Length: 327
Image (cartoon, rainbow, N blue to C red):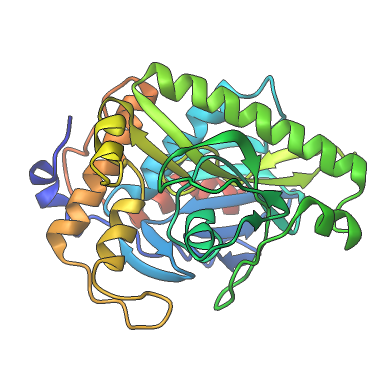
């Protein structure tokens, strides 16, 4: 396993942005740069930015590459459940995908009472809510406890400087965001994807506590899985071996996701009301090691560090993508 110490030489080997003027249709997301290509495909470049609490926080070495590698693993492992948008992978940080008409909602599937953000069920439950996302919750549940059943908690999809908002299945139908048939279809796909992910994670000693999916429609109107799947940015992974002991002690589970950064921040401020302090370099490297460890556990293979700091990540990406503006 690669630890934080081994990553120290790579502290500045990061991809904070990936603007390439030769590529058309540029759009910047929270962590990805998007390009709409002339042939109707879309290019997604995963930067090393990390985002939470509706704002950017820092850049984590190798994070974009790890997210791309993990997403590829899961797209391949779930292709029999739902079609996905992958067309090509010309660089470790890059996916070329189908351009879809994206659903204006995010689908979050949950197995545990967890979370720290405004749309997570744990803060709502702690505040006394017992009907959350249109679902009735029993009294007496504790933080990070397994729920009586697997649930879906959809949210709106906010842009920059905006906040996601909870939705119920009834809201989605009544507001005509999706038809009843579309909602039934996407809910079934989301549950099936999650159950597959939960099964594979368990075989590797991990608990997939919850995850976020994004879907779109292709030209034929079929539902297609988009964005990413079961990555540490879109999912909450816990170490199964220590889960019960830590729950009994009232401590949060050992996590292998961006909760590492979230928890560091929440211990020092209210990120929705107060300025977020600068994240120290040692915390950044610990986060990078956690991302890499998650990849190695899930994919079952070692993450290979580059032998040299040259070329820089953006230079390598430009070289690998030159075909797309020269053709």
